[in-house]
Image (cartoon, rainbow, N blue to C red; front, side, top):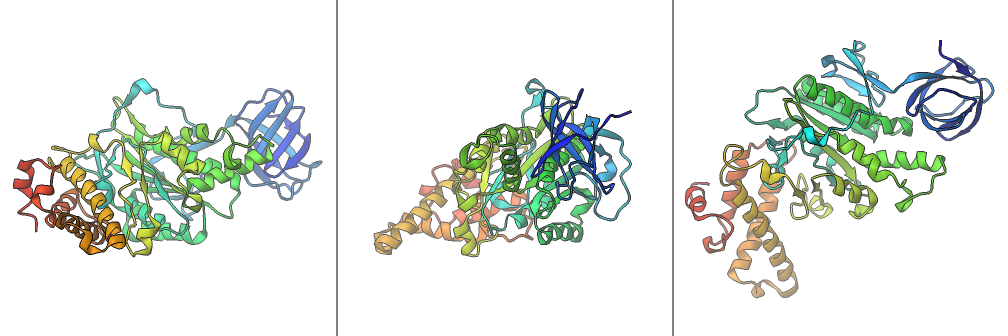
Length: 458
């Protein structure tokens, strides 16, 4: 029989102090019954002698100190997992919200998970095709990788996320592919956009959605990504699926952490965020990967909006340290009508070399990728020079590179949100665009590839 306590001493924001407790553990699940009989849930956040600090998931509004009963359930917050979760929509605490039947779980799993032993990790090496040329061709996503998207307020990261969720697949592998989508602090319109898009395109048939709305308790936001990753780990490592986890928006998650930290009166770190922000984010990101001897994998695409488009802000800054690169959306390209506005020069996939080449994509992939990067950078420099000094200051090669950069933005980058290009189409388009550059300037591509691919790509 679980012991009940009626010794609530203080409530501050989403936190409750309970005195006279004994035998409880950190992260233990708590049930709170209010004076009206309503039941709410929480978890133990801190223990100091016989005092426990409890974090309330549904908020503290309407709770009376004297007439509230608290029970400690002796277990952490858990998610009931089953393959029947695929095609369903849940809230941030794992409750179905799509009017479908309740999930009968195969088992219940602690949402905090356990870190993958570094010795048992397998190195990411298989190419994942997203259908987006700027990612597949120049910043290749590899199975088991963590590749975040850095966006800004008002930029179309939701469209990019939905496009990747619809189109992503592992080439040459018969294993089942699933998408786990975790949304934190998004508006009702954004949530409806994702649900409608997934339903309309059929992507819902291989997806699991966890949605925490902006008007849901901020505390629920802290559990949402862990719920999504717990589901992903079950599908990947117990059911052998390749799972793509998309988490949006990590900035809202970090704001919820800051809110709880302020309520606990902790000493703030950079810009008011808690000093353990790096550790907390790494606990989410490091749950991606492959395990030796197991066919499944978890690939992660976290999405975060950079406050004031500041890439040195603590959230993108710390994310960059933990993950293997970043895809950056550009406000300049967006305002120029480029869709999706992915800026390839500062974007980077640190594992791209492991997932491309003969047998994975195509033999010419690495060379053309390097040449396109160099040509685009040269073309942007030439365009800036022309603005300052005029076209007459440009050499013939400069003019060719400037023309390439213009064509590249219009044809290669701006493919729209409905176009799904396979890797062959992306590579062939790259060769087609490179035709405007004099052959003598193609210094990063081997001669045999130029002879084989340059002239036959219209």
